[in-house]
Image 1: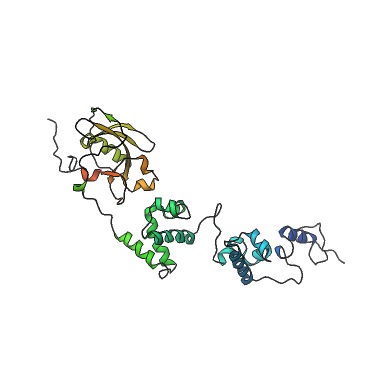
Image 2: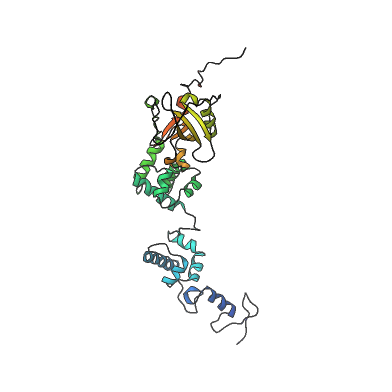
Length: 323
């Protein structure tokens, strides 16, 4: 028999199967039989058969299989995947499946199903805290895809329309539409607590002496901190500590003519940011913000925007020029 060099190795010879020894070695590295190149006369596995085998394996395991699990539970091998789809990921995509877990990036479909199922369960748009506690995945992939948590409902609505899922998720679309169309109701400042309640298990202090000046309206959280400091005494508060850790501030609060109590304060530009920052409400007594937009907030909230005019820092303030 005449010797013939293979296309990858000029040192090996054609074996009895009609392939070079190098080809036989490469085939064995992929796996014997159906896992590697098919032997002469072996049945060629089609795309449809591979897809059917993957679905059958997924149904048997109760989850999307890995490639080793597919090889173990079916007659489909590596060669069949590569020759028909190129990669395992493309094969799963052709089946409408997706692997999840560490090392796998979540697609829009997986994120939508997880988020929309929670919306349907709660009957409302979930907060970050709701999602972290009850959803299957972390909120991080949603933030990464849509930039901020507040953009997620609009992004999900666009996904439903793009994928033509209106009939299946019509109830979720209605909840999203109502959320996007509505604006949070502002609490009537006339019903705000006028006399501070005495906190249980908090020590009393004597009256402190403190004054501080300021002008301007805030556009971020640091502006809230600065504005708060300008009329903190007018609110019956005196700051004793500011820190970078949560909560941001410790202050003394007048509870009657002669007594003060310690309160733990967190500064936010908008009160709902407290949720986005994943703070624990049990470690805070009061939120000070520029805009109060958290309707079901369990904490007391001081909205500086509604107090500016009352405390003489609004545009109607009389300007006194020095002589």
